[in-house]
Every structure is written in structure tokens, then in C-alpha cells.
Image (tube, rainbow, N blue to C red):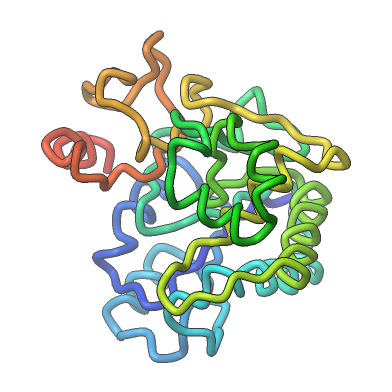
Length: 256
């Protein structure tokens, strides 16, 4: 049975997705699907075809895709038969191994950042606005989990997406500018709900490292990006932050 990488690339061109595609295809040959708009430019379309990336066409544009992608993911997966699945951000994700081969792969896998919710004004605001101060106080000391990389077997991913859509329907955040509040739903689900069979991994697991809230000293940077213990990390997320700008580009050249 085939594995699947599923991401949203609406509004992106070849330069936005190049590192993702090239690093992933170096290690992984199964299916990749991107959500894209029907006005995708020719250069980007050719690049996707050359790298055997299939398209899911949507009319959703702009930052609205951040919350609407979960509906698109679920509609797509309910009609398909895959084994292991990654739903992922695209622009700021880099691969150093085939993550589906990770020995820790479980039914549903979430990934924790190097900062607690209380220390992040964005995550704090989203949770407060969506659920109120009582819930916020209950989970503010938990580590942030990023919704941008979620791995699992199909049944685990389907359950997660159904929970995200439940929260999307019942807990709304009205803002013209402050997108990204799907993070609020995601962190409520993994820190408050008990009905999902899941594992949570920190950045030193070697599985996924979400490094936007990390320090340079938290990792070993050489030809690859490694944990403090020297393990090559399968997936690097948020690598494009300014603090890494003198390090990451040289590593990317060696990876892809």
C-alpha cells in the first residue's frame, strides 16, 4: 500500500516549493499531492509534473486556505486508500531522510516546539480568543505543537481531521489579519482531548524538528542538521527564520 505526502501550495510558485520538493524526492518515491489554484503559472506546473506531484485544484485563495485545507484534506482522503500519511506545510519544510521509515512512527504523531504556549503571544492569543481564559490557563504551560507537520496511518489522520473540522465549526476566530488560528484548534486537541491514540515528539527525537522557536545551540549544523546527540533529523520545519540565515542555505545546497 502506498504512502502519501499531502500539502497546500496555493499561491506558491516554483521558488517557494523547490527545497521541499527536491529534498523530499531525494528520499521518497511514493505519492505527493499539493492543493493549488487553477491559475498556477506554467513554470511551477512543469516543475510539479517533472517531479511527479499531483494537483488538487481549489478556488480557495489567500490565507483562507489555512483553515479550509482541513476540509479539502478530509474530502480527498476519504476517497483514497493510503497507508501512512503526512499532512504538511510546504514552503518551510525540508527533508533529510524518508520519514515514513522512522521506527517511532505510530498511528498518529504530533511534534512539539522548544517553547511553551504562554511564551508565544500568537499561540496565546489564538487559544484565548477561541476558548477563553479558563482553557488557556489549563494548557499554557504545555509545549507548542505545530499543526504544520502531522504524520499518521490513515485512520489516525482521518480522526484528527474530523476533530479539526469539529473545532472549525464550533470555535471561530474573526480577524481580517491574524490568520494561523488553526494552531489554536490543534493545540486544544492534542493537549486537552484524550480520545486520540497519538504520540508527541520533541525536537530532539530525530523525527521532526520545528525550529522557529529554537536556538542555534539546540542543534548540530554540519552537512546536515542533527540533534544534540548527533542523530540526523528526518524533517526540518520553519528553517527559513532569520536567525538561521547564515547556516541553512549552505546545508540546503548539500542536501539537494
